[in-house]
Image (cartoon, rainbow, N blue to C red; front, side):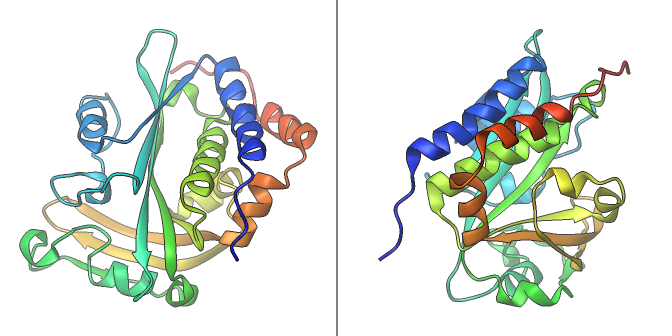
Length: 246
């Protein structure tokens, strides 16, 4: 019998991150309508275009299988975005899902360009199966970078994904610079491998060579339910350097 989610512990976990965001002048908003999400992110200055994984015109997300996070500053302008969706890979695995382009398009035969391709060389991707929570579209506005907002967004996303789905795996694809700059440590992902997604989407003007980063479901449960609140408060508060202009 599967263990039930300790909702009280999840609530305490999320509250730490929500409070940390508020101390930085950010109000977090959670939503489930990706048409609304795209309508907001499309007109957000300096943010790149949202990948087709999270766009209803290319990959609709059914109710209960996705959510987004937007952080607004004191002027009610967008300072942070993040999104997550659930993939049912009970009859497949992450490598197959990426290489078939099904991770990006609900109907690759209709939407993919003839030169679109994705190669997944990360060995562990073939073992990532079942209920897989995929996190992406994380963006922090330049004047808020270096204040731990990536860590805050990741913490909220981990808590929400666990509470909603208790996934078998939680994963993301990130550029190599994210490891070099120590950003992956902020994402609280335990595992990482190169060759997660060597991607070309012609009409999206996307060329990537991303690493795969992930947690198992049990690691996610321990992170959320077994956290030490005092230690969590300390680590979130420690990543708060002075705010930079720009």
